[in-house]
Length: 299
Image 1 (cartoon, rainbow, N blue to C red):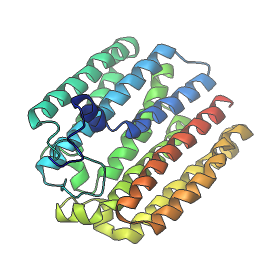
Image 2 (tube, helix red, strand yellow):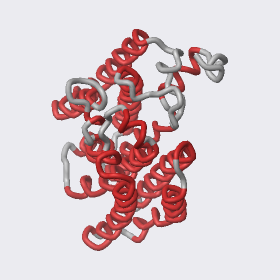
Image 3 (tube, helix red, strand yellow):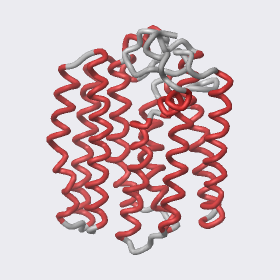
């Protein structure tokens, strides 16, 4: 254990392993999906609150699983560019982490049973698939993050499933608008992963973790990042022109300065300096999501 980790308590280690800064990614889909349900005059607060808790727990469980299996696969080096990992630092044991993974995913499942009872079997299917996908992200015989599917996973589960799934809780249906509003959510949350993978290209290549950044290189990753931002703003225009949303739907345009800042940082920074870009990308996704939710609510 190095000198920087000696003063960290067990509680702090678990808090660190949960990666609280990433938990915004679990909040935004529920917030945006709930906003559309409110706009459609069909909203039950308890459904969104339980969905939010389940979403956060699944995110924490996924983070714990990533810590464990990246450690076991040798993807976490002592001099890694990213934040401290608790297993490679010796702060938490493999057994402790395995038990925590079972507990957190188990709690998410038990809480989700209330939604299954209240809404129906579709919720059970969504919940079980989400938990299994969270585990399969870095674990199992074909870990998604190690085969270039991490970006797809994040877009589907934090975008489409999280947003349209929340909407389904209230209206018991999926529709085109609920799918469209999930696109900016998924795209901008995926961009958090894109920055992470861009930063870790060399480490991931060495560990044979074949992310899209490793597979296609830095130029592709920058273009992917920019396209996700552009598409997110284009969705606003589609909602306005094709679905009669009010001008309030363009509220997320206020986040454009932050979009330009993070693009500039991605093109200028390398290595551990990109940790700041990662932080800003998470805040940007949250800001866009909040403004987007208000614009949808004022539909």
